Each structure stands twice: as C-alpha cells, then as structure tokens.
Length: 193
Image (cartoon, rainbow, N blue to C red; front, side, top):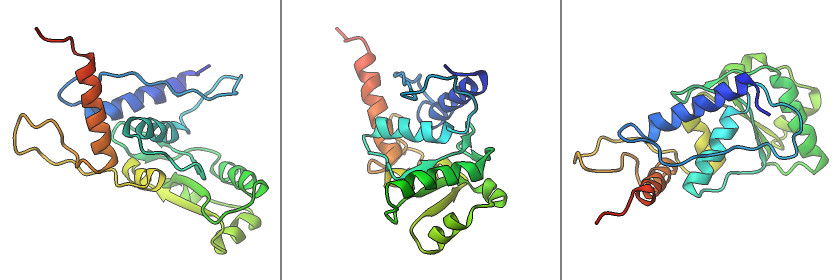
C-alpha cells in the first residue's frame, strides 16, 4: 500500500536507527508500521516522525501519548523537516479533539520550519489562547521524544572503556532502546559451545 515517497521515508527511518543505535554492529530486529483500516495507497513522508516515535515507543517500552497529533518529515540525522498541508492537518486534528471534548492536553507536534506557514481558523486560535489546545514546534526528533514519550531522549557519551556496550544513560528513551536492541542481538546470536 506504500507509494515510493513513503517507502523512501521508511528507509530514512532505518538510517536514523542505524545512526543512533547501530554504528558498530548491524541492527538485529525488524519493525513494521501499519496504518490500520486504510484501504487506499499511502504516499508521502509527512508521517515519518510519527512512525519513528511509534518505533521508539515500542523498542523502549515507554508508552506514547495518544492525545497529540504528529506531522513532519525526518531525515537520517534526526532533523524534522517541513510538510505540506500543515493548516489542514492541525485543523483536522483539532476538529477530532473538539468532537470528543477538548481536555486542555491535546495538540499537534509540527516541524518548527512550518510555523511561518500557519494560517489557522479563529476557533483553533481561540482554543490555543485559552490553553485548551496546543501547537508544539520541534526541529529535532529528540525534542519530540520528551513530549511524546515523557522522558528525555538521552545524550550520547563516549564510553570510557572501548568494550562498553552503551552510549546513552540507562534511564532515557534512547538508553532503554539501546539496551533492548542489545538484548535482541544477544537472543539472535547462536549459542556458544
């Protein structure tokens, strides 16, 4: 169901995961992202940040917030890139939230570079002014991780020992991902002896 631009976006996600978590060894897992109840072709890369957050949530075991809409393309270095139709995407999610009652926690994560393109309806602007709906501009995946998953992404450190397996602090999203990948790699290795 995936068109060529969406497929390219998935390859970029793979590049990002390799850059962050598999510089010294191959990734030892596979991941699938499925848009359930979709029966028409998927095209474009506007959902690539959302797909990446879903994969990071699954690998880390940290649940992702369900009251936030996400749009944005991502590159292999984790920069969040602009997308088209930004106003329609925000207003569409706002309408869904309003139909189910605004809670004061809902909003949309958008690329920071799309802020200059915002021309939103009065009802959305009023809800934002009243603190009942939010727009969170981000420029990197790591900025979104803390918002969506509620924990810091983690800053890599150079291990003091060459044999040290982990670059990210244990109690961060990336630290959790790194340890999960190490466990999957261990399970995939043939037993010795």
